[in-house]
Length: 342
Image 1: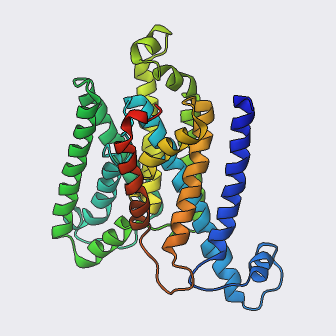
Image 2: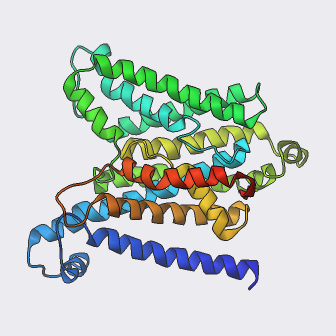
Image 3: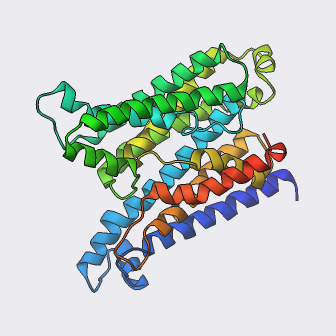
């Protein structure tokens, strides 16, 4: 089988798997709903209980769509950062980008207690998007500025972790002095959840994600050249500075959007690009970008299905499930580091 046919085959398999995982995710939950009722809810047919239709259309489908966007965007932003930093351990969470987004949201939610005499418990989602995107962009810009002075990729990684620790410390100070009701809201948000996104929110989320991915699509050729080294990329005439700005904006939109709507989700952005390279065995971004998006979406749909604890009136934090699944993958990658495809 030629490489093109093999990659086309993988796309088809992943697309079919994504559809299967979407249906599985929608069909399972704390309330057991017959398959016939699920199908009739899709086509506006008769169902035994009207509450089943509301659960399917107003909760489970938006949640599944959120999982697809979240997993895909985290995978794509992780892939771009690993290419740009030339570091297989780079990712939105490891480099502190998600921490920057969390700091932006923490300042918005918890900082109101310091800035305003009256604090608002209900904050519009567009404010969360702006706060988290700005936080992630600012932190990524700082990491990039520092990385100009440090060439060692492992040092850049440690610097990103240190910035992540600093933002966590600021969030800790804000949490210590914040009113209990605001602190409770922030803690619930930080645990991660895909079920708080309505159809109206999903539209904002989709627009943010599409903008971030369109910018990355514009950078496919420069990213492929960066795989051969920064000096080689410069010799072909591309502007590293321009690509750097585009990477900051795109990853800020993707990681910031994910953090605003789903909370800080760990491990997906780091692990998915490596799993995808093991599958397609190529670093060509024309192939790896769509494959990473599909693989990330599938994995987060599966994690969310597990987090729902089907048949039980309980739900696990999505961040805990991704960590339980993602941490062994990262450990395995570190043990097998010499065999990483990059």
